[in-house]
Image 1 (spheres, rainbow, N blue to C red):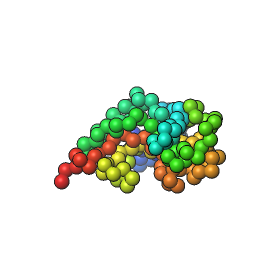
Image 2: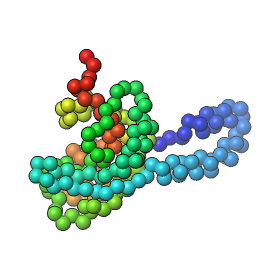
Image 3: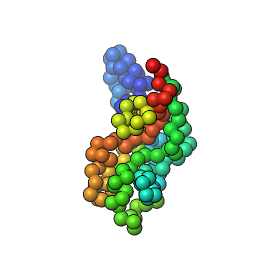
Image 4: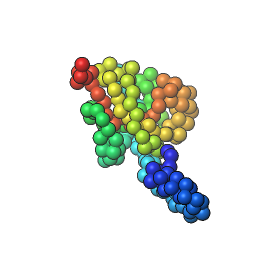
Length: 177
């Protein structure tokens, strides 16, 4: 997560001025801020398994207000970002994995805790044909990793598909040539 910029500037100024004793006085303040920030970034959503044939998918639902707050924070970055057409979610299981999960799976509909990583990343999604860029916020979800492994899957989808909250996409049809 890193130290907030305002503290970094203050710490550097204090240290450069030889006022090392101030460092001790602000340590507890920094710890409190980190705790506060973590609490703001830790949320939960319902684990949903969709079992419609041909459209199987596992996800954690994300509150729309939370998604809008995160989008408003990051989407002001350069670029014309479109709003995803699907509801806010964190992908949890692939189609093939959902097919292998027993019908009486006890975690379907349960709340799963996740922590937003408070940064914005962009990638070219190889498996999303009509999209050339996807903007997202990475997510840590230890509970989901453990759950996936208990079912015999890798900790992440497709072995290394980082958990994330998609905040914006860029469609090929809108790409400037």
